[in-house]
Length: 130
Picture 1 (cartoon, one colour):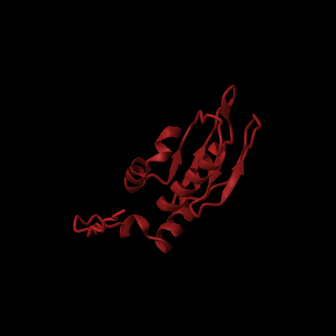
Picture 2 (picture 1 turned 90 degrees about the vertical axis):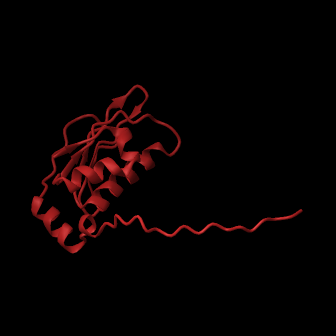
């Protein structure tokens, strides 16, 4: 199990490090502040971290005051198994670590990750004259 905080979701490196170190479940307790498109960001980032690391993401969200809640559980394929929306309470979901193993075999993203320093960057030298 790997643990992050909500802001860490915006940066993929920490979840990748945890998954590469053997974490099959990422737990992301949050106090995600309400705002335009913030709930969509929350859902998308949780799904993305689950997919790119082939793991479950369990993300309990603080509800009330300025926080949006939206406690989630996402499976390794990015399917939202639980979305508490704007409700308080306890949600129960069955998870399978076998699914993590199967996902990582069929989509070996952790193994296939390139660490090459030989990346070609092309810059345009075009200028516009007015």
